[in-house]
Amino acid sequence: MTMHYYAFGSICRGEVDPGSDIDLLVCSSATKPEFDPRKFSIYTYERLRQLWVEGNPFAWHLHLESRLLFSSDGSDFLESLGKPAEYNRSASDLLKFHKLFEESHQSLVKSTNSAVFNMSCMFLATRNFATCYSFSTGRPIFSRKSPLLVDPKLPIGDDAFDILARARILSTRGYGPPLSNLDVLTAKANSQGILDWMQNLYPTVSSI
Image (tube, rainbow, N blue to C red; front, side, top):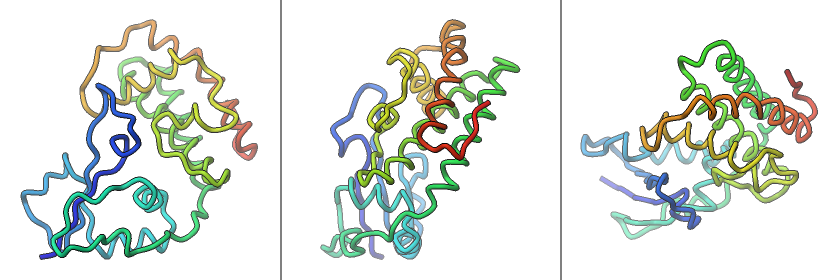
């Protein structure tokens, strides 16, 4: 059985902090029970080839930021795939993440019972919107801080951005201090600014 292991994400960008995890990719010609999907992103070689052909953002992420850790045959599989095809779904993806932010914000306004989840989705939508937009600049940005690294950057305070980022970590990993009522109010107060920023970057989307 052929296998390749890669690291990717924040550890390869030098962005490790107490909230970081280690993103690991397993490329395998067959499934094995010891590959825990909670710890590894598990892909077949054929699926990765398809992502390369599609120009999928994840293919570009791996192409630009992955590092080989282990190869059962001495080769670098991802390197052998070359450059992914051009990413050409930015319009539909920007609309998708704008919609996700709107829906998550509306759910947060209606009820705070699922505040952590809704704010986590708001962060995901904001980060992915910025990453998708960054492709149009010729410099894809995969950092979780991508909204602060594109031009124009997200016009909200660092504290407000950190609250949404904390919600994402709490929701996906259960790590960090709980959100306060003030944190929730801050997220609500900055939501329109985020939607206006999205519309500024991509005028086809419409704000609330």
